[in-house]
Length: 235
Length: 42
Image (cartoon, rainbow over all chains, first blue to last red):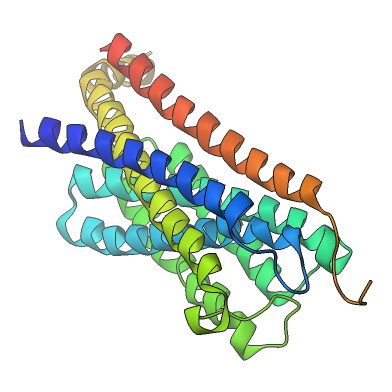
């Protein structure tokens, strides 16, 4: 009952996120001023920056849930962690594509082995690797433990992605603050940040439900699978 | 025209927004589809 009510709330959170995304993107595309040097191309910022923020939020949620999963060994924490990782990987993939599209008119290249781009690609590959690892392990408890450890290891790259532009010389600009940009640029940026966050929370919730249903099916099929294995061993 | 300023580029902006919308829509659809398939198998 509690879970069903939570699920209904998440549906509204996702729908509200979608609505905010439409409003924020409209303001970003048609109301916000063009940037002084990059002109209209800078409007990519209103989807690129929120996607980046929320991808990192998803990975941070996954990191916290990995610790909980190792500590408490509950199916729910493992399922939520999987949801956060998969949503993070989707957003991370979109982030890389948006960055490449922005890079072409501003830097003259689709891709550069710059520190921010490289660490972002490594972050994508590491967490996609965690998802691949999960698909190779049949035993649910072992799968949860191994993927939790892999998530904790992969998370090392997340602060590197955020701080690398301050620590090393990079083509990518350092983080702006509201005091350094036009207020009409801050509004769509904030709206879309919350929008992508709400949509991502709904995606995490949906993916958690899929994982729990899969686990339930595995447990139902377990006696059948064990009988088949026993039969093969005796033959 | 002053130097160091980018003019135009709307095609890049449209491409970035279109890819984002497509990516989010396809993933949301895959979530619905996978959950429905599991429910049907139960």
